[in-house]
Length: 119
Image (cartoon, rainbow, N blue to C red; front, side, top):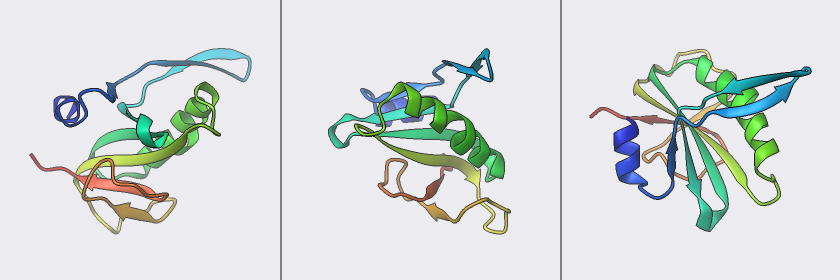
């Protein structure tokens, strides 16, 4: 998946960055699967890759990665978006919010997006 995303976004995809942050008085680390920087439009897309659609992606992105990224990158200057990339999608999977199926990984939108990728 990383090779595919690097091919699609050669100048703007950052695979598996380590983020260091302080929470509850301790230093911690987290690692999203990837970030796409759309500098022209002032947005950062957090990418989480899963074999099949799962609410784990939501918890990781919404409750861990986005809060950390919002501390690193000023929210007034950047918009943050979420995209889970999966091989299999089951619409009956219990998920904390309504998702939007995305034809493209970088498709604009304010909903949590799911992109189905079958190479």
